[in-house]
Image: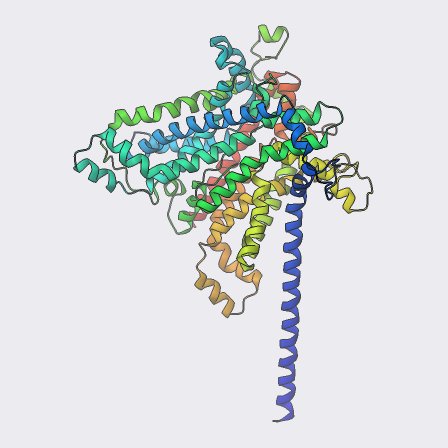
Length: 298
Length: 323
């Protein structure tokens, strides 16, 4: 081996070593950053897990003095359980309306060429992202309090029904989109063959179409429930009666109106209120994989 | 508000070279309307009617009413409530000369730029891109944490952040050795920007994860064999494929963040008007002050801003397609 070549080889070896070192450093850096980001996301959540089981929780996360007394206290609070029930009523009611309305509309829009269909879809697309809760807040409040209340108390403020309708209106455009997409992906051949065998339109809808689009309907239902469950603004504005307020509003009340917030109560209630959503997430991610077809929540 | 999943695939079809994004959004992949059930137009319209009615009453009508209220001196109580006068453009003149409107606008722009366009977009992409290298289980844990921040009810996460940032021994304070910093008073904007980044990154992460799976692995492999660095691969191989997704994602999170009411639950717009972003400003004028005509005018200005943003995005998509 000539001396020249050996230095070249040494150079290459050195360069390779440097390269490995750099790669190693990058790798370590990458894991460090990943850890930091995970901590950033986990840190606020940790409190929700520790504080409810702590006899005397503070703001800071600390290892709890284990107790279940907080759960006893919250269960005896006259507003806690009813507010969860209110949340449930609003969520399920809205989901029913949204699923029914979206299913009918999405199916018809997907299968029948109605004049102006594309324009309609365009407007809906804009509406669903542009007209949002806050911008339409004032007229919505007025409409419910002045017009709805004048027609019938059920349509006025302090009514679960009017809150349900308002939220249904807000969720429907997006729901129709998601569902129309879903129906589009189902080949019409199933319906065709059922028709060939002489089934009536109604029977085809009931026995062929509904079973086919059930996964899509389930997605929409879960998506609506999660949305309504967490919605604060609409019930906050439209429900003044403490007996009718859902959990989202009650938490705020627990925090602001007691003077010094009772942390144990708040934390425990927050956990109870969050559990259904977490359970739903686990269910959906296990059953369908929490991926981007039928995204959930806003 | 809602997350229509279809936004996700509209640009995907655009990326593969379809001409018009509108057309791509509405006809790509969809079979031509085949009315095999024999529904017929009349019954189809009947099917669409309930949904349209609800949307009309609870979305379209309020939007139109905003237009009207904004042109009156309507108030929640008092003589102007009973007998509102049409004042035409007075409210708009007042709003446009009101410094608190510009304060709110400026704060909203800061909020959107740093928490959505930079924060959620950047962090979401970083997570989607780099967690691919992690072990499947580890990746699931990281993703679940990010998703939890997104799916928990807003009242709960708001309180979690109050606990985190509290002056009297919040977690952050405790971690830093109790300097007693009142984060929400001294750095309120930074606080809600960090909060919103934390809250919303999951959406971008999921959208970019889906987008990245549309990049052909063979091209990534080629880039790797050619010795491209990570940055070069991103710029020359990955980005051209996901440009549409980047635009869509940026638009959606921009609109949502623009109208986001979440920070109200943490700072209530304060201290003073230091975090009075658009949605909070609107809430304060309408519900707290009861000045409905004035807030109607603000609503309309916000709507216009949103439509302008949406149109700008559609234009960008279209221009990219024709080039």
